[in-house]
Image (cartoon, rainbow, N blue to C red; front, side, top):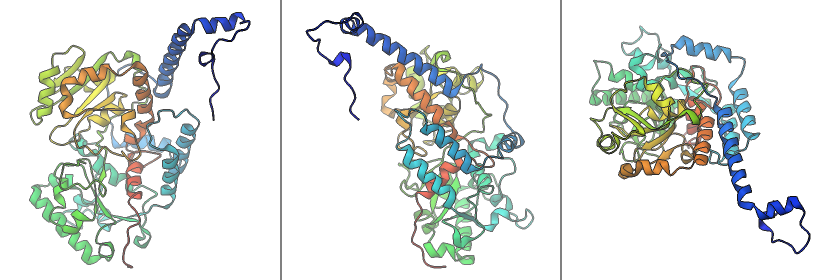
Length: 449
């Protein structure tokens, strides 16, 4: 629809000008300034309204029971109802500068997925603990919130959530996908296996057994099968089985275009989430006084070493090699931007940590296939910088206007729920977003069973 002309686009007419119209014509710059100030004020309050605010407080690592209580409080809402509520809330708002490539198309397709997608899990995931010496490799982890599993939380939580999901089917003939339930993280911690070569041998033998005992693998040569891994050795797990590597879908945290064993159009990037307590009320932008926060090891990353060498003494930035002298969460709460800098792998949990605490992620990690990037426009709620641009990091961040920062903050509030796991999946959480990536890869031609 064509926009109406305003007084600023009209030429003064040779006629009597009423006093109020004369004011508009004579002082447009002043009015523009007032309108700009009003826009910034409304944007700031909108950001606070969307995300809320809270005073910094010390956090405790949640237990499975704590997370389960949250699920019980919402048990009367089905996944479809939660999704519809979110759909309605977004549709009623102003989506100018939306963090989604196409929200309407995505939401419609997502609803169809919830009603139609079916996943079959091989029976090993429900075997009796005493039926096999390697039962722990296949069974869901009884406590995925254990501190030692934190970096691999997403790997374990997908299996936990899937087994409680409405997408699960006991009828393999109805399934769009088949889940291979081995855990690479559990194999890595098992002294009988442990090494990358032994893990690869174990996975190869298991996949071969599946192809002998069941007809589903051979019907598609594994193209409708998938497995989950968040450990850096996970991509090597499939290296000795031709069809597992080339055909099956690898859902992995280490989603790098640069790695030979990751195929971007086939495989799926999984968000690496650390189990943090709920942070429903976020610090608003105006109380985030630090420009940048980063804390982490630098020994295994020359990019991090360069970062510390160039900006380590800058007083506008809180950069620490190792742990900061204050609680890690506080650095995320009081900073505008939080750095994710490539370490040994392209991925770390810092991206999701930043999103969880309302800090705009600054991603310095070349070749990172960001999770859900075919749905989310990461440029609308994060800053992506090349390794070669470390020297201009501060200039880049300071060049971002207040209006753009507030817009990114608002968008960050909208996408936060996509980076959270629940033992019983609901809404647009990490489980359903990952399942949607599988849904987009459906339609494999297979032989009849």
